Length: 176
Image (cartoon, rainbow, N blue to C red; front, top):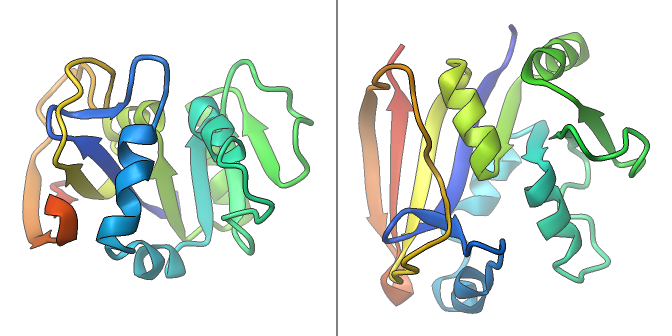
């Protein structure tokens, strides 16, 4: 493996990345108040984006004509999405196939996005950095960022920053 992988993701205060139906309005309606929060700087160092199917479909649903990942290779990890679904992406059925693809392409800095992808990368020991931006809202139910693990994953706190509208962003390095 020749790449490092990092996550840059937002959650509600109670740890959900989306409502049970995948809705992100609770987050997107607040983003204008808080600004960029370091996302542009983070993505400037990324050459590859890995999304799960739900995250990929959410990006398509944002209703913009501008592909947010222009200039970056985008891989989608999905067992259901057609492999020829979109010429801007490559679709991979499992994590081993994806890792082989990223290694063959010479990926250097990978952005792992979406709950299932972040969980898979964590369980496989692929994630090196985790930046979580916590929105000041309780959803009560939804899609969690984290899932079951076979062992503890130790994190090293790197920084915490507060932003307008009550957002708190914390970055961790994953201890190897």
